[in-house]
Amino acid sequence: MTASIALFLIIAAGALVLFISGRVRIDLAALLIIVVLAFSGLLPVREAMAGFSSEAALITASVFVISAGLAATGLADRVGGWIGALAGASEWRTLLVVVPSVALVAAFTHQLMVVAMMLPVLLHLARARGLAPSRLLMPMAFAASLGTTLTVLGAPALLLTSSLLHRSGEHELGVFSILPLGVALTAMGTLYLLLLRWVLPRRGGEEADTPLVGLGRYFTEIALPPGSRWAGRTMEEFLAQYGSHLQVADWLRNGASLPRPFAPLALLEGDVLLVQASPEEIASFVAQPDLVLHAVAQAGEALPLGLSERAQGRARLFQAMLAPQSALIGQTLAGADFPARFGVIAVGLWRRDGWFDGELARTRLEAGDLLVLWGPPERFHQVAEYRGFLTLSPFKADAKQRHKAGLALAILGVSVAAAATGLVPPMLAFMAGAVAMMLSGCVPIDQGYRAIDLRPFLMIAAAIPLGMAMERSGTAAWLAQGVAWLAQGWSPFAVLLLLFAAAALLTQLLSDTATAALLVPVAIAFAQQAAIDPAAAAVTVTVGAVAAFLTPIGHHGSLLVLRAGQYRFIDFLILGLPLTVLIGLVTAWIAPMLFSAG
View 1 (cartoon, rainbow, N blue to C red):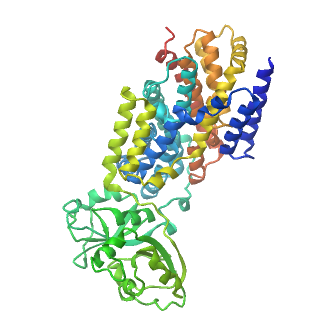
View 2 (tube, helix red, strand yellow; view 1 turned 180 degrees about the vertical axis):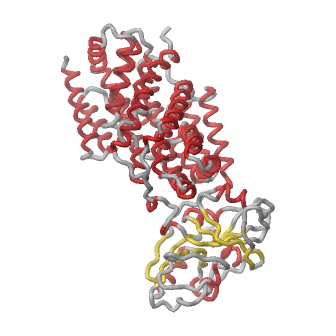
């Protein structure tokens, strides 16, 4: 062992302690690794900083923005709604639809976003159809991780592996170069989860964690303006798109409620729907051309106190709670005349244990009501000074540009096609896609930047120089010799299983990116000495890092469903251990066929 190897091992051990202990935030730990590598002399400063400009890091940031565009246009919600509609009422059919569908979506977006998108959909589906949420959520989280093996875009660890292969003189991974392996793993995982779903516990979910209940749902009225694309279409079609995130309480035409059932009836211009919706949906109706907030539409062009059409572009949503002694108590929303009194418009209402029908404007106000108010920010000083309100706060919600869903899908398709066909480098293709999402208005620029999770970005920025230092110091070759001695006489299949097992265990303590950064250079160095293609060894290690389900700690998606499904740690081991073993066997068998050393 040389001094360089000893120094690198000390730095790597320190990094492991930081990552495992959690005493330092993971993003700060990543920056610390970069600084230490530069000061130690193992790498020159330029190479220590190379991770920030690496293809893997820039693609990861771009994919976050593209994913935000899919969410901001409601496309992600629509996919969730389609999946829910196809799932049917039985548990096995729900899993048969959910597992491959979630995997497919996760192949092109961030898996955590997919789990977050599907969590409320499946909880709502479970409540509506009398299914135990715990029978659906864990398979869904597993499917999101399996989906990351369909394309190189699915996980930052795979992008890092591609970069490490390139730096070692090997060919980079193409966008779809691991697709056959991912298809085999997803198909096997789907069959496994269907056959062994009986081992899953039957427990209820934490409904309060979802945006479908509690304070997250307000009543508001939406109207169909002239030229709305929904005119002439049935309520059933409307609910196919919106049913997962709003509930229709009443349907008014010319001031009168229409008879139920609503599903077969056709919508007409001027119809008003009383709906219970999330903050995001209410904010979305301000910007959509096909559905408008009824209260705003009623005000028309003669909006009083400066609420002209020019001012509407600056209008914002706020929420205010009525005080117990407010003079507004007992008045209707129409009678209170918010436009004349405050220069704002009341567009929504929340009331504890409240349910409304008929016109919202005729609802009499009660103490504790939470009103959603719309108007220019400068008008809200009058609301804040009025003693009849207890609180006034911004209505925190990002509007969804649902009418731009087709454009967002087209941007994603063009980006993937350009990268996959080699017309432009993948980094440029996805950076262009991210820029297009923001320039087209699919996602506001500030929201797009906020969508970039710096933790995986900084992890990649630190992991690349860490891998370079492992190679430059001779540590990768030294460890590869140790693996060669340990696996002397083993078949390539057995060696790949050993590499997979090492990654599967280490990723329970570290992130998949950190695991790949430490083990992929060793796998490449060992493969270059043995009769194994380096790409096959590197991909096997990375699959072990991104698709090992021994504990919920290994994957953020599993942590997200842990409380929602009321799971215990042992639940993940019971279902995840056999699945992880199968994934290792399939990967060690298929990877050498995908990447032939000859």
